[in-house]
Amino acid sequence: MLRHLPNLITALRMLLVVPLCWLIQGGRYDGALLVAAIAAMSDALDGWLAKRFGWQSWIGGMLDPIADKLLLTAAFVWLALSGESPAWLAGLVVGRDIAIVSGAIAYHNLVGRFDAAPSPLSKATTAVQLAFVLAELVRLSHWIAPPPMLHAAMVALTAALTLASGLHYIVVWGARARRALRGDGSR
Image: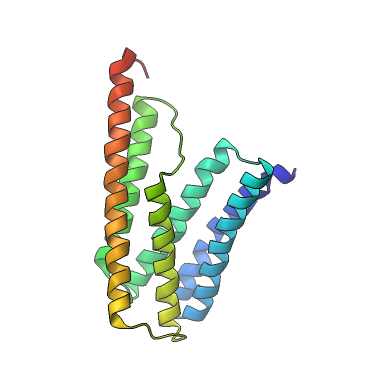
């Protein structure tokens, strides 16, 4: 029964999307920061448990990135809707995720089952996006007033990694799909 604990933690992280958006929309950034920090810790915990005890599963490998995408996409969109974060950055994050999910669906339908293991670039992108959201919520809670140059650098780094990661997925998975389809013509 314990082997399902990482998946349960991931599912609970998905549920945190609702209070996170509600808190951001209401301008309650201290609470949103707490929810986002709990989500970040739960992401680390479920990954550690799965690896440490060998509780990895195909469904867990699918749910974990979905939970990350839901939480981060929601945070970027709600921060943009509240006027606190650049709308173009939220659009870039959402666009990347749409491209990845669309590509995964196309690959599944045209080629077959795929391994959802994230690339090192994707892991770095997720970490930077999460750091950006946490930094934005810290800034908006008025705990720390970061210098404008630091904020601008975080925006630029987040945008650059998001774009690079999206392009990386398109190139790598596009090449895999072409090789698989040329190989024997079957799915």
